[in-house]
Length: 167
Image (spheres, rainbow, N blue to C red):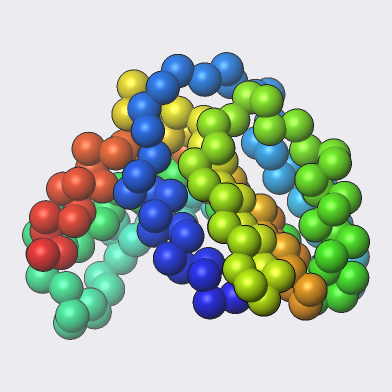
């Protein structure tokens, strides 16, 4: 889906700071555990540990200078995990099921996008004092369904420092 990267960057950049209730689990946990072994789904889990390993690794990142690498590491250092579920089978059905089963009362809606091609993207956030604790994307269309959840502390002030470093 061509809108995914744009939507994700927009979510991280425009997320407002307001107090939200904390959930015992992130939005995708129930779905992830339900469909992780289902062969119709691609399931991805990235542990937060991987981001701390980047700090100690001797990575050859020729395109980035030390200031840019440091800024990226500051943004991702407190991410506890990333979960993704994706399928291109019965996508519309899974979109409707997710919309009916997931309570978004404890999230703040960042944006909704509906394209003329029938693609839908909704982005939700839980945050407190300019620190995002969960960023959740729900993506659906005629041929794709995905749920993406970033859990951890994503500090919006660090995002602005990353932007400055990359400029």
